[in-house]
Amino acid sequence: MSDELASGLKCRLCGKLYPKEALNFCTDDFGPLEVVYDYDAVAASLSREVIRSRPRTMWRYRELLPIDGEPTVGLHVGCTPLVRADRLAKALGVEELYVKNDAVNHPSLSFKDRVVAVALSKAVELGFRTVGCASTGNLAGSVAANAAAAGLDAYILIPDGLEQGKVLGATIYGARVIAVEGNYDHVNRLCSQIAFKFGWGFVNVNLRPFYAEGSKSMGFEIAEDLGWRAPDNVVAPMAGGSLIGKLYKAFKEFEQLGIIDGPVSTKMFGAQATGCNPISNTVKTDALKVKPVRNPNTIAKSLAIGDPADGYFASQLIRETGGWSEDVDDEAIVAGMRLLAETEGIWAETAGGVTVAVAQKLLAQGRLSRDGSTVLCITGNGLKTQEALIERIAKPIVIKPKLEDFEALVEIGAPELVASAV
Amino acid sequence: MPQVRIPTPLRPHTGGNDTVEAEGATVGAVLGQVGEKYPALRERIFDGAELRRFVNVYVNNEDIRYLDDLDTAVGEKDEVSIIPAVAGG
Image (cartoon, rainbow over all chains, first blue to last red; front, side):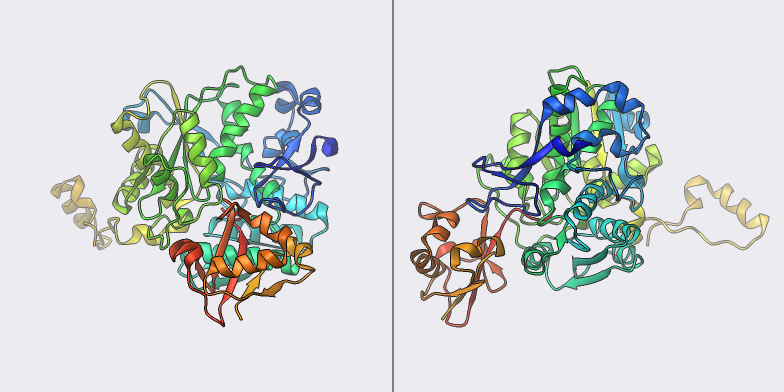
């Protein structure tokens, strides 16, 4: 099928070509490798009509996803709701607002199912039987779940001190979960050594060029569900900085193929936590180099990557598209989570609070326009990061099972129906 | 002597060795000596006098950008690791 569509890998720095193999960096200059497509061939087989005729999963865009045969892992991933968020729009003072809700992605409730579906389908094609990842939590659950369903052995390496929901959410699938003393960057470095030494398929190490392409499906879905157009503004959370670039790439590929009308003029906005803000700091200080953060400290643990692999490219993209980047503190993150929950009924993880709160900050600054269409990307589920809220959210008041007790509460007034936060 | 760990895909440039020994009191001196021994490796990790953008170097468990970059001191028993930066996320 699509075996001639993704033709190989290419270094983003020097352009050196490589075959489709498990390799993430150019052996001449260490530059990142990216999948090369034959867009003329893709254009000959992919159109709005073809996409519409296929099941509602991310694989309806399969010509633009880098596997050779039919997908074998993650067949039900994607096509999460694009929610028209009028109540949140009113609260923020925005004209046309949408929430792309990957908090309900299948099977593991985060956008990582997209990248893992591609990476593990590719791992099977390349003959790997053992796979793995370095993860801040969401990827751990996704690799563990999808590997279990595919019958692959999985090694999941995480920093110690992750949320319990994320740890359990990987262990339950029978994966070997290893907590490493240190932060994510320590884990990542170790995985870079393990993947090549043992010859395993680590989704975000040696399979990373394929893996990263999976994020484009989020952008394809946004464009399709907006009625085949790219939004005016996108606000996306940034950890390693890959997602924001792939969202934009998705719009540009659709434009190039004539699937949406150009020119794409989407402004890309990146959201980080103040306790780990290497990319937003690069944008705000107009720096050329990304200065890594040695000791990330934020409740948004899924974004706590101090040395982001795609930080350079993300900051360049933000500048080139006329967007901007900001960061917010823990209190603002919780407030953002609550605002999204209370206005739209969507419980996002801490990273979602980052995205909402950064959007609010950028609107107040005038960096993000109140006019036009804006999409907020929600990438993970609130059920997995309960620790961040448990001390900050009101607990229910306790009464006896007597009508008089309830009536007494009502008489006091509605706000008193809920006990104040501990 | 300090040990230098080579990323697996670059081992063809060090005669197949995953670890090489090199003398030097700083990271720059150690990598300089490795580079003299294996010129093909040198041009891959250095751009002129500077490390390439996507090359990370660690002394034991610490990224040299948090220490003194190429001037970071290296002891006899230290391990210097060359790690591709393009991973994770």
